[in-house]
Amino acid sequence: MNDLQLVHCVTLLTMSKTYSIDGVLYRYVYSSGSIKHTQYFFRPLPAQKKTADLKLNRDKVLRKVYEVPSLYRQHRATMTDAAIQQSLF
Image: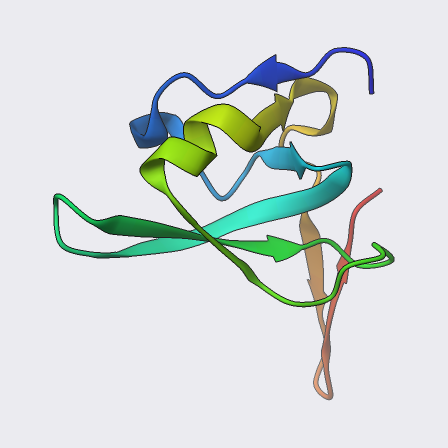
């Protein structure tokens, strides 16, 4: 993961990209709050050491969140009658 790119604008966050925050891989989920005090929510990918969702404000996103371009659109989901299985690779 040497090809990390710092996120320069919060409007470029998408669910189809993978982000690295403090060495853990996350997926952007959604944002909430007012225009001035927006919170951005990230969910760790399976098999990561962190399991809880992460909530960051705009300033923290611009300082701590790195995009991992090599993992773009790698989130796949397989749907069966009984369950939905997601995989990273």
